[in-house]
Image (cartoon, rainbow, N blue to C red; front, top):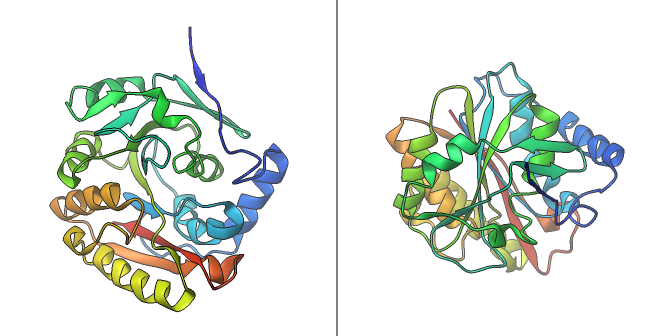
Amino acid sequence: MSSVLLPSVAGAFYPEDPEALATMIDELLDEQEPLPQPVPKAIIAPHAGYIYSGPVAASAYRQLLLPNKIRRVVVLAPAHRVPFRGLATTSADWLRTPLGDIPVDRMAVQQVLAFPQVQEFDGAFAGEHALEVQLPFLQRTLNNFSVVPLIVGQASAEEVSQVLDQLWDGEETLIVISSDLSHFLDYHSARTKDQHTSMAIVNLQPEAIDFDDACGRIPVSGLLLSAKAHGLQARNLDLRNSGDTAGDKNRVVGYGAYVFN
């Protein structure tokens, strides 16, 4: 019997009404310009409420509207609610959003469960927003795709990179890393810190990203290792914070969007 992982933050981080959600995402995408380059192999996108980070995330997802062969998306997001060792995946067969159900690639899940750092742990997904908020963007930019959902706990960049390399595949597989940047600094301090982190990402230097530079530091660092090994280059599409979008400038969260080709 198939099982479905229900959404945790619909109606909070993004609209619960399907029509309102689709309209919001489409409007965010329409504000962006596609790049004159191939569809990315990987993207990094933020994961706050859409009114805060949606415009930044859309700059990366807009690139997926170019002609592509993507049929599987590997999504890695940091754990915010439950501490655990390694990477966690779900026992669910489908991930649900207000826009519909996305099939989980169970064969790929079984492949990565062979690694000692990967476990099936549904508790990691309970109430977790960082992976979930990426899914509606994928549903509005891709067709007929499956997902390999992974929440990253206490792990090394090398452990993440090992999993990514196992699932790397060709043009059919897209990798999505969910991460915000600095948290709760004043506007100008955040801009300085985020510019440093952004430079480290673009230069594929995970060693230059400190613990408090990005909540998704571990999955980001794992991607940077794999990107370097596979000869990819990174490009920053947008770098802003909540003070630029929908918040005040006294205590902001940083957002960056990146594509890897």
